[in-house]
Length: 301
Ligand SMILES: Nc1ncnc2c1ncn2[C@@H]1O[C@H](COP(=O)(O)OP(=O)(O)O)[C@@H](O)[C@H]1O
Ligand SMILES: [Mg+2]
Image 1: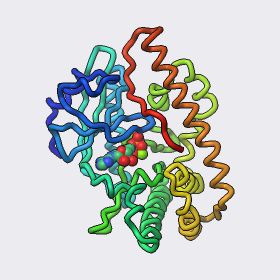
Image 2: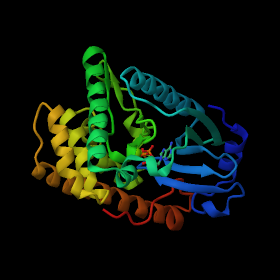
Image 3: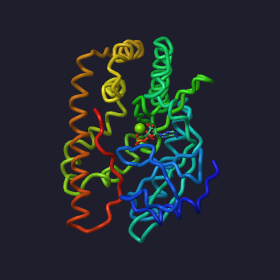
């Protein structure tokens, strides 16, 4: 995919993460991830950029990019359709390198959590089958390739469904979680750079490995996808998704498991976000350092 590298570099050099509107190169926010922020640049229509401001030097960003590339090629081998993509490394200061991933932009109404608003129940059931079938394709791949273990974040907002062609794409590739011979390839500390400095020890000790491991686990991945329908304000779809999941799943999932899981997950992410907001405040008023991340406002859960 062809990207105007200079445009992205210039955008990064002029960017004040806390005042996106002030940028000379006009940008629109599309989404917030737990780690990346997603923009569209007015001068580069049809492309989204996922900004990851967490590397202390170019080599570290290159290394991450290499993991990303490997992860994507494994996913493709496992039968997952991925968008066209590209990457740009911007060395902003001697201490900060920012990695941008570019992806072809999809129609917002085709993103999983949106597209279901336009589908009939029958079509939603087919979409759910297609999603679970892709996920189980990944588990099959893991079975057949003993040295590789791929993780996947199955939430509805990570899928794109093209109603015209019936094609399903997976978007959320920028956290390359995979193991080679049981070895996690992604340095978990990198995920923690977006966490507040004072909270890292707690997160590291209690949540991190646990949260990462979930994405390798068949049952958890199913539960996470379904429980997330609460957050998407689509609880009415839960029974349908449970029914389809249970057709694929080796272990049956119940409504109660979904509700219990959601309560815990919501707690963890709300805690994480409020710690990050506290950290941003400390950066501004106490440490007097630029805070690199762009945080969402209140998230409805
Ligand atoms: N290529 C894309 N085209 C259109 N929207 C996108 C694209 N990539 C991401 N988005 C939007 O941004 C959201 C978050 O992107 P994602 O890659 O899943 O990041 P995260 O890891 O932060 O969840 C998506 O759910 C979707 O709404
Ligand atoms: Mg996502």
